[in-house]
Length: 434
Image (cartoon, helix red, strand yellow):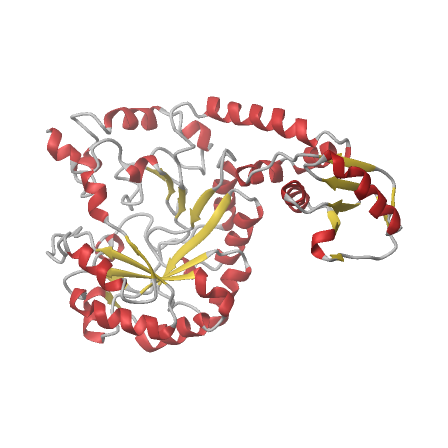
């Protein structure tokens, strides 16, 4: 089947999005483009004229005749209901969407059946606000090639440590996520994601199903080759966040032991020399008392390399090592970074501590560990501390209706919250309430 799309305004672009997701071959004829894509003498199964102005139809038909366009049928659209949040639904129902396109009822199909499906999803998940969810974290590995001094993995032994998630389990988790909106996917938590030998396939699959508007990973950029990191983008990665805390060996031995700084610089500059990737790469600096004094020189070096996006984040002192910096330092960092050419984001972990209504770590994300367990948040690395069940044995719908999940949700904001929350540095509201 082949379609000719005529009219490339908002209506035409929306219709093109549908065709791309469904996988229909199409060409574009549009006056504003000053050209016709594929002007071969073929017979189109359907010509779709897209224009919000019905009065333009006659002129557009005349232009079709002048160009001697051959077609079997023609359809007019003055509107095409489409938004990016629908992409996952359209992909999952692409056969029905194709039938609706061919029967000229795509507008009514999307307006009726799509919203009926959204209503059903909300009914199937009564105890969670899916619209509030922004992030989906899937821990694809718990192996790592470094030993960071602020990381749970460095100082603990637990069942899920040093494991790779299989592609089969990853796919099952992605398939279980309802297509009520598009989320951000971060295929990691503890561990270096690029160590998983199936990560490229995982990213490709996640991109293909259209459930995520962005796929991002954090990496130390030291586990693989330059070509591999480039291939991450070719498979669908949207954002690569590189962790760099220092360029001084003595400091790195205290913060990220095992870092090979020359190799890191070599890999980073290789990627930054590719123009199309510059806005897809960010550097995250985790700031502690070990490296705060180095921040001016770190920023100067990163600007020299051509870095355009910087994330500044204070270390949360999980192990009482007294390495945290004061909150007032964040204002200094932001002012300092403003003197460079970066786009800067200051990640203020202290804001989480002050929230007294909802825990955003719990409410705004779904977190799956490497064994497929759904855990309350990214701070819980050992699922034996708290989990709601595993996708290996239950559906997400069942897990989010389970007594374990409902009880946790009811207790989390009570004066007697779950122990795991009471101990959490991101949840000081409990200390205020007790």
